[in-house]
Image (tube, rainbow, N blue to C red; front, side, top):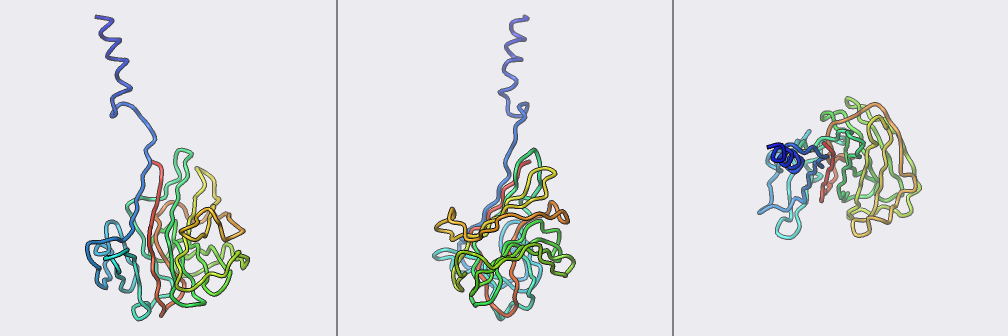
Length: 231
């Protein structure tokens, strides 16, 4: 009888419900749909977990490679954010949370970005680049007020209008208030275009990730959104 009990005990770690392990939580959206999504103010029509802060958005070009889009005629808010609540940006268990998206600004001299630590439609961080320049920033939107945390004009390229760039941010682990961020071309993600790649801020924690921009009355496209966390 003792032998049988010992054998059962030895098997317990193999039972998934009784074997604790670190699970990664991830969410991705390439905006490839069965058909285009018409202009809508409702995030639920864009897809799972999406929230729209303002204006009308759409998903276009789904016959080939879909992307989330706002047109200049619909863009009446220079600090809008569209965020996803499927996976939150907790900093747990010594693991890094991260988020990334490909962003395109149609016109020169406009800012396109990735939102992170989104608390609500007016409170979030934004890492962004400016087309027609070699400028990039991390800014904080705090109840409608915008404050630059980091601002440089030393990217190794001039960011082009009408071209996608991949923005990625990695949060520090538990109790670490640093952020590591990169801007690159989607085809060459290891070739980082921004020499300054880190900053620190303690104001916003947790929340979600999404897409954002810095100018009104212009068009933006976003693609290949991805967020990863540890539970």
